[in-house]
Image (cartoon, rainbow, N blue to C red; front, side):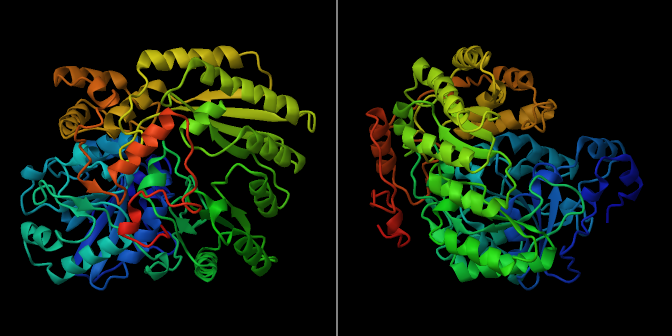
Length: 581
């Protein structure tokens, strides 16, 4: 056991290293164990819905123990490296290298160097071929593993897609075969849906794991309660999974198809258990588009009726742009009017049609009017720039739209203020835009300059633009091949880590390493040929490439595709699961 007590009074937020939160699980008897590692700090990792679910599901497997670990903050890491303290798990303070499996939850490309940093802190060799039998199996799952290529050099096996069933199956095999070698264990799990083992699956198609029925999973709404602040410090219930809207830029909307709803009764059971176990008085009803849940009205009424005297507040993190969403938000706000969030994504109707956003200018103005009349005086808008087929007029259209919204909203309430948050579009694997080029640095600078000049004198509108350098690197990582694994390793050895944090990110290190390895970043951020084989093509998400190509062609002619609840678009998903198509 690693002893960290002497450091706790000299580091920030020491409670994040204790592992004794309310509802934490401490197993003493087990045949196989795993440490689930989130490669960022505790307050971010503990907000992960996937981590919360897997923690309780896998600990229900008889003979299996799952613990957690997070990247230590830099002050703790300084102590650990100085005193040669190895990376440890939260619950038992066991060294990471004593576990049978270390599983990384990978949600963001800029966390890759943190994966290597954690292995290094644990005194575990970085590359698969360097790790002998004495070291754990290293696993990875999460959104980023839809393109596993950049991490293959470091990972023994991936679980691609929904983890609840696949990882339980792996855990049971590990318990039954705890005395086998690592090679034997890998061979035993190689045919599980969603499992990709680079050493055994060369040239094979890997079908992502899909939980066909959310009702059947072992998760019952259990929640951990941290004793320190986290980003989303509330009970979180995933009311449905997937999205039917078909936005062409959105990877999550594609790879989590089809929509699978929990029943009203099941959602109420999860909510009731979460409140009972935690004492939280705030519940977040999570999904990619919460207001699209078919029972959303009934669910809100049922929760509010049941907990009328308990002062329970409800959060809906993702609402569609229509007056109905305002009605839903007003129903749950209980008079508290924080910022109302809109995501038109593009300023011009032409560009919204290109990305298949399905939001008209009338929708936007009707929603704004409803929100302002309902009492919201702070509005937040999300846009992207650098979208395919974008022109300068589309950038200017963001300002024009906001200026008109301000003008009309202030006819109702003169104190309206608007925050405009602008991100740089990054093409992602397994989307209709996986072939298009990303903005160059020069194009980003040009478009940022346009926005800043237009918003400079616009009173009541505050502009925030995402960092250009981080977006550039995210683009390289998102459509990377195996060669980028060498780059990740080299930049880590040069000191890169916490690249997702603006104050820690240093693009210069990455550019120097690219030059050293003779890597041209434009090979990854540039346009791809439609006929070329892509590094992630062997991952079968359930959606066929022909669908992506059709959607790309529709984008070129500014044609919309309907919501797939209204009409099946033949994406291919119904080969694997009955989604009504």
